[in-house]
Length: 378
Image (cartoon, rainbow, N blue to C red; front, side, top):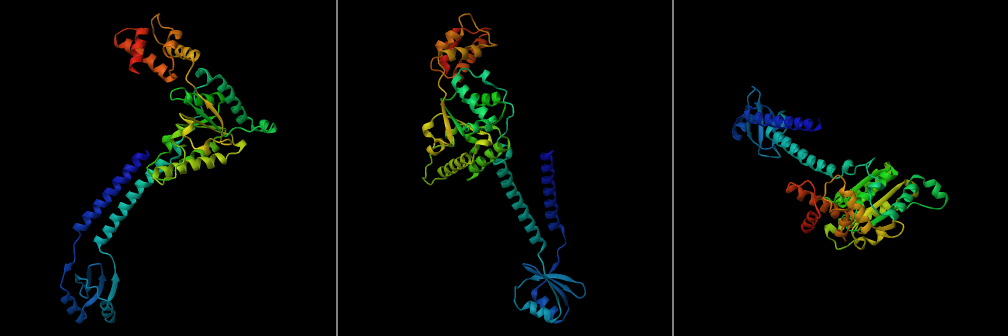
């Protein structure tokens, strides 16, 4: 409905401008005369009114005749006309008026585009609140100690007063470090689902913009929304993309990164224990992060999400084999041996690729040979 309304307004504007342009060319123009004729009529006291325009004078005679003459831009002419009681007026020509209309339309259009673009970059819908993630810890293989620790943090979020009596405060931030594909994002979603609390996902690219200072504004917008929906988990993926060590080289990119990090610091320092906001950040490298961000009192808890061990790989393989057809030479244990050093995402990808290879050969079930063929393609 809004899009249709904008289109209709745009069409009306185009039609109005077209009508104005046509009127400019079609309207009758006053007869042109020489300046000497004007002076002769003035001496004969036949001039009743003179309209001063930018380039011409529109002269009205007492008999109703009108004509235009060049405007001499003389400082004495108006005094001469006033001495003869000639009516004087200053107005813009139709061409000037139309030019102003076109200029106004251009500036409205230009600044309208900037406004729409600016609203898009800092739209309140940039960060969406997910009330039900649809994932719980049952969907996360392994990470048992991490699950236990994080459930305690969730309990503190939900019952801050009880823990405050014991002198325990909730950590402001939790940092998850690990290689890509090991389930950091899945764990964050599962944590919100397990605790049945609001979840706001964000990633480093959400804070990027072609305009300077938009990044820090988005940081403020994110945490303002989190406060309104507390208790809430704010999850920032690819944290090393915005939280890198500040570099005061003076370049535009480094300046913007410094502002974003400073905005994050201000927001983290502004938290109070009873706000019920937990910042959960995922990074591939903690060493790349600004030291002020990850010091105690901001990101209090730091956990490593390692590559799955043999038992985890076996559980992951069993999970990914569900609903798939495979030969008898395939088992979760045999696949766990094949996938030594693989992350969870790689394991799922190889099993899926093996099933695709079997399907391309019109075989219903895939075999260990298909697994080996899939391993060569990754």
